[in-house]
Figure 1: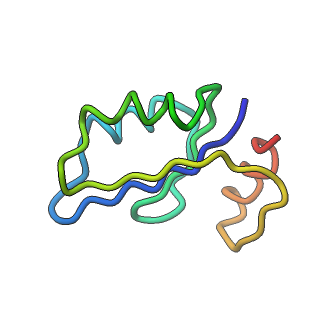
Figure 2 (figure 1 turned 30 degrees about the vertical axis):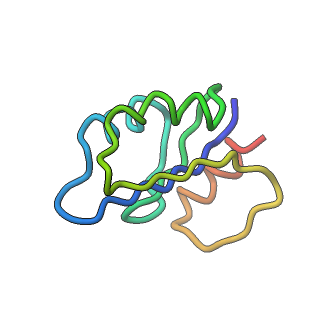
Length: 87
């Protein structure tokens, strides 16, 4: 499995429940208001194609596969999960 970094920005209001439910259907960690680490076998393109029908014209999304080395400061449980999950 790999880990995808999903950055999903919505301009106002609430995020699409369909997109959030798709993200939550995988092992994941929310890294910030608009960013998630998602453990999956899917490629960034394949994951994007699953959520693309739910994006509004104002939404933006960027998906990239996370690889070592990584750096950052997160809660301990998130850092530990990333260190185990990123292969």
